[in-house]
Image (cartoon, rainbow, N blue to C red; front, side, top):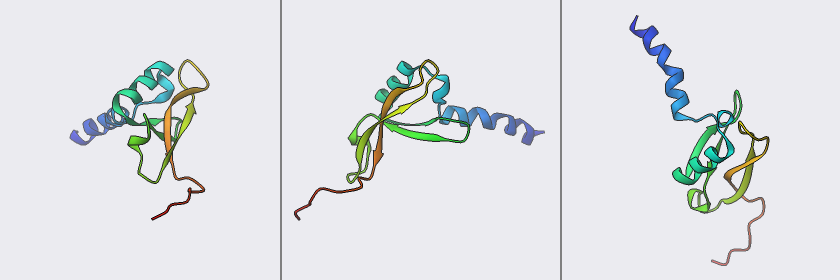
Length: 94
């Protein structure tokens, strides 16, 4: 019986750990990223994305790129940025 009770709680814990972008308004999603700095959000049934507020939340070799996603109220909301490894790096003089 205890196992069934714990199994019923698992989806609730998972939802709390990773907010669903599809259920949020664009403004709510942007505010969450700005407040927390970096947030992993559910973007689809089997997909997720990490959004950051700026380059401070990326590794030093990564660059930021604005990321557009679908929210409850709009098809294309600039939620925040994503961290990417650049295809070409500028010359480094060490």
